[in-house]
Amino acid sequence: MLGGSLEESLQPLANVMKCWVMWGADMKNEKSLKPVQLSALKLIAMGTPDYQVAERLDVSAMTIYRWRRLPEFEAKLNAVTSSGLEEISKTLNATALTAVETLQEILCDLSQPVPIRMRAALGVLGAMPAVNGALEKGLRHRAADFDLTQRFGVQGYTYDSSGNTCGGGGEGIVTV
Image (tube, rainbow, N blue to C red; front, side, top):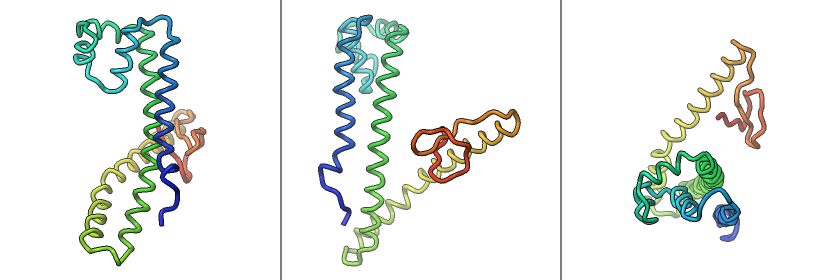
C-alpha cells in the first residue's frame, strides 16, 4: 500500500493554487501597471503566446513587446513565473516519488498481469536517460564548483536539499 490519503496527494496542487491566488491579490496592489497590463502578465505567465495575448486584449503584438521591456512588467513577470515554477517543481518531485513507489509495487506484485508489469518496467527504463541526464548535469556543476574553488578560492553555488549553501560533496546535494 502506498500510504497517504487523497487529500495528502492533492496537497502540492493546493499549494500551487494558493500561490496563484496570492499572486492575483498581489497583482491588484500593483500601482505602476495598468489593468490591461496585469491581464497580459497573467496570460503570459500561464504560457499564452504573445500574439494570442495581444489578440485577447485587443492590443498590437508590438504593444506586448514594449510592455515586456518595461522594468516593472519584466520584474513582476519574473517574480510570478519563478515562484510558480518553484511550486510546480516541488509538486513534480513529490509526484515522482509516489510514481516510483507505485511502479515498484506493481513490478514486485506477482499477482499483477504480466503485461501491466512489463509496461511498468518499460516505463521505468524509458525514464532512465532523463534521470541520468539530470544526475550528470548535477555532477558537472559540482565539478565546476570544485574547479572554481581550486583555481580561485571561490565558493561555488552548490546547495543542499533544504536550499542552504554547502561545500559540495555529500548526500542530497542539488547544484544550480
